[in-house]
Length: 158
Image (tube, rainbow, N blue to C red; front, side, top):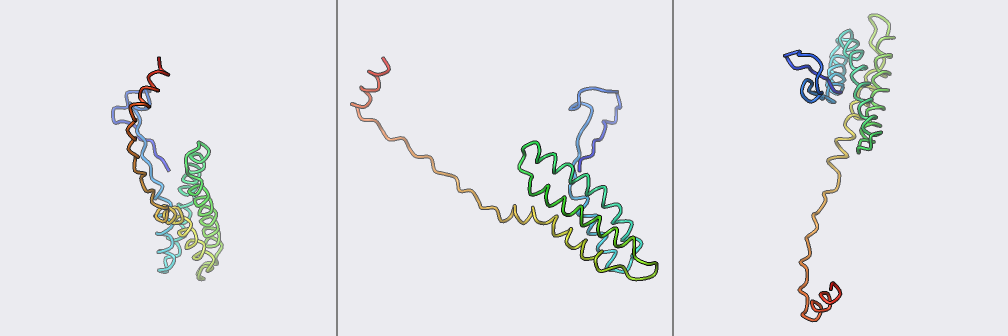
């Protein structure tokens, strides 16, 4: 998710690189989902509901950014799919928690959906860690040409 912050001068419209700076945070939905899960497991159902509802727009924004990155040709397909799945799971957890009867414990679906959403957010990290390390190829030293080969190349060039 990206936030656009204005310069403190507020001098009016100008070039985007001069007057605006982009601040990105794709970890916000992960942090909010973690907080909602912690609040839900510790018995703070109301706080867990509000944190879950707050997670939905943050997760949607992160999903939109990931999908747009993938459509732009950047290598972000896994991130787009993982954040889309996590968004669906966060919405499911919020709906399950919101529909729980007052005073009753929430459905286990709410907790498990948040756990699965956190796992979905972790998939790109695991893929990045497990990505094979690229071994740099040693540059081969060019072999020396024999005098006859040099004469042949020079005669072709002339």
